[in-house]
Length: 328
Ligand code: SF4
Ligand code: SF4
Image 1 (cartoon, rainbow, N blue to C red):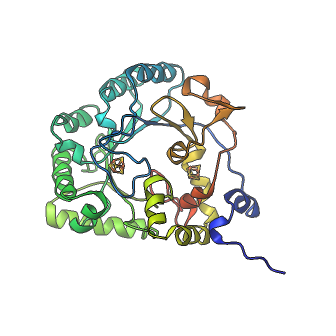
Image 2 (tube, helix red, strand yellow):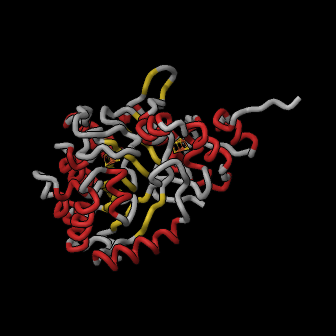
């Protein structure tokens, strides 16, 4: 007799086995550091549940422990995220420390744009430019209604003004010293449209209406984690969204999953296979001990199994999704 299994219950590991795919860590090339949950916005899709009242932010002593680890184990890329990473009072210490240890390191700032015109943060644009950081900026649409619906009233205008400032500082003009990439994510329970086509639409509309340029667009899928998972449950859409993700499983995305070569570090220094696992408290452990960055070496991580669960279907649906956009 055939048994019915809801797609929302399909197991990610079993799906990989059925496709004869193994998912394990490879050489570490990116350290993704979450500087805390403090943010000046409270976006509806936020997988961090970040906001202005959150108190979890990385301390100066943790910043120095990370720098100490980086002295011994420099990675090619350091990806700074949050919350709004720039709101951490030790953001500049961390950036300057990383550069002093390895002048070749690529540092990414995951920026919500409006921080550039928040009172007290007027230094942000100049600082990012003077240190040659790569700016990856949230901009979920090129229309005002969609951006404000997801991120709050007035956010669209403030984002436009921040993008114009970044252009004036030399970002987004096809200069490898000042890359500016934008991030799209859907406003609800659907998959993103085709990335390259959407990038053309963004470029045309932002140029025409606001004289704004940028380099690349990353189209991300919303993972059913944290605030977005609550939103789905509130609207009775959770199971339907999981079905969409499971049915869209694309085996060719697995090779590019960011958990293969990225290590996620939380505001206390504990480590995870990715930022989503961090929010779900799926720690990298040694037995029962939760590991911190300073408890491992990149060699310890190589070939370790990656902890997966249902939310991983968000990374493998359709064209796939990662912090650097689509995968297939
Ligand atoms: S999505 Fe980004 S900008 Fe929005 S609340 Fe979360 S961390 Fe802040
Ligand atoms: S959520 Fe995505 S990046 Fe994280 S472990 Fe799952 S597949 Fe990998």
